[in-house]
Each structure stands twice: as structure tokens, then as C-alpha cells.
Image 1 (cartoon, one colour):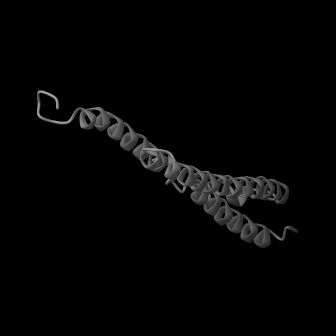
Image 2 (cartoon, one colour; image 1 turned 90 degrees about the vertical axis):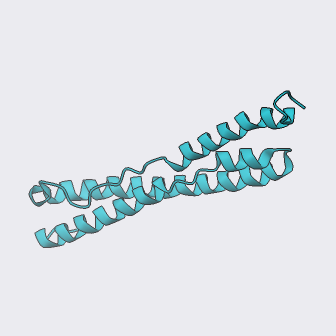
Image 3 (tube, helix red, strand yellow; image 1 turned 60 degrees about the vertical axis):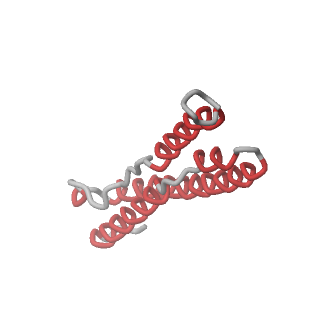
Length: 127
């Protein structure tokens, strides 16, 4: 017992628990940067420019979806391992990436591509 009447272990664990909570909040607060569906100047894009942007966006969408899968697999692995480590439940929870930034990014790219495909059709471009 400490002079304050609190068990020594509790005083040592409190800063650790607070640190884990802060880390968890930092992971959960990661912001997504969605792509705008329409942009100024879209109507001035030529067929080649539309095709190039579609190609770039599809590659970026695929990469975002792949990264999302990797984040999800990493979360599962960390949480499974944390069950077997003493005190690991806090570490597992704190290191879990709760953001959906990759999903938001991929969805916004898909929406942008839909806009570009419609624009290409209006202009008579071949995709």
C-alpha cells in the first residue's frame, strides 16, 4: 500500500492505460481524404485525359482496397496475439486501426470513375 491508500500496482498501471487510450484515439481518428466526384474543368477534359484519369483512379482504388484488407488482417492478427500476452488486451485494443480511411478513399475513387465514365459517354469517347 502506498501512503495515499491506493495499491502500488494501480498507480503504475494508470499511466499505461491512459497511454493506450490515447494511442487508440489516435488510430481511430485517422482521417480519410476522399476524392471529389466532380471537379472544375471536368467538361473541358478530352477523351485521352479522361482515359488516363480512369486508369490512374482504378489503380489507386485497387491499392486502397488492398491496403484496407491488409489493415483488417493486421488488426485480426494483433488482437489474436494480444489474447495470449499478459496485459495484451489493452495493447491489442490500442493498436487496432478503427478508421475506414481506405474504404472511404476507394469508394470516392469509384464514384469519381462513375462520373468520368458518364462524361466520356456524353463526349462520345471509347473507353
